[in-house]
Length: 247
Image (tube, rainbow, N blue to C red):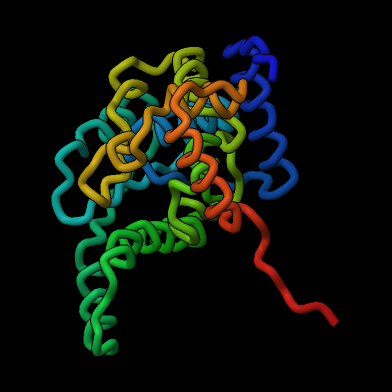
């Protein structure tokens, strides 16, 4: 598989035009509502949307689960882009739902359900804000995460439009630089903020290795290749439409 040259500024401009066209066709005059974590994906997506629509139409939503140690990075992005920022602490909702499920299930709630619950509550918050502010919700997942299913279905995997879903982590960073974002927002160590590990620690391989494999098919570590292929096959359902019975 031959690797094609990636022209970050060209891709950035095309993505900005695509976002503008999406809103013209699917919400003319609507605002963009986007969850802001302070990581590269939400930072780049917010920057592209601000360029496409104007910063006055971007609503960045910060959603700490109690105390968020790196929330200052999200606040820096809000200030850097000059967009509206609001904060909704999801801790009370997480505690209430967790307690309710534990009471309803004799065996309690599974560990994985507990990890994914905050992401799903955050998406519920984004849609509550969106419906209250005449908005459309941005999905901020990238191709690398989607490739191995590193997202929560109906959590961060949801949204109304997805500007980064065909870009690898490496490409997202390049587009972020083309958009003029500072390195501290682009190079922040990626973490889902849920499991207590960085993305790469959780996955067991680097994004650099994954991105090269996605774009070129090249990978030296056979064990990592097997793991990536397994994750890709296992999690493909997350990107497909919900199966439905047809008459």
